[in-house]
Length: 209
Image (cartoon, rainbow, N blue to C red; front, top):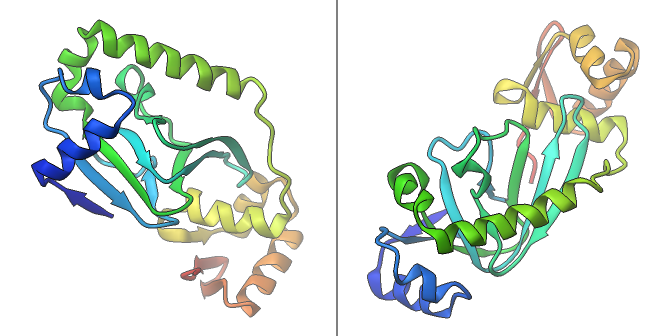
């Protein structure tokens, strides 16, 4: 991830935006963020809530449930908003946005500008439109089919602190499988170099390219 504060580059990017007429009237310290493919654009681990507008590239938005099941929400391309829900609600602990390719976004802090955002009718009209589309998409939400092996890796990556699974029986309960099934998957994943056993009933997710 790279943050760009060059005023000329920011102005050029805003000028090309679909929302240029509105953004140019807002007294906000905009900057640009560039992401590489696979980087999280937004996640529960993000410390500062950001409003971001996709200007180049695309993103995948999905939910990871407690059992490791991945639900695709939508795909975002140019002009897609991220952070619109964060203006009104606490951030969801399940929603992730990931760069599907190299990505450039116009960004600004929500907290520093929240009062102004809530008083800007033009901005709020755009947010209402964006949220309506997203809510409509969520009504048709369905789980992506995945094997137990895939769910175990997702569970460790997104739901376990530092990618460390502790306690096979407890994890098996969350993953809706037997402890024997989970142990078999963990053994297979260890042989494949995906996880490493660090203690009794404890496994750490290895770096995955």
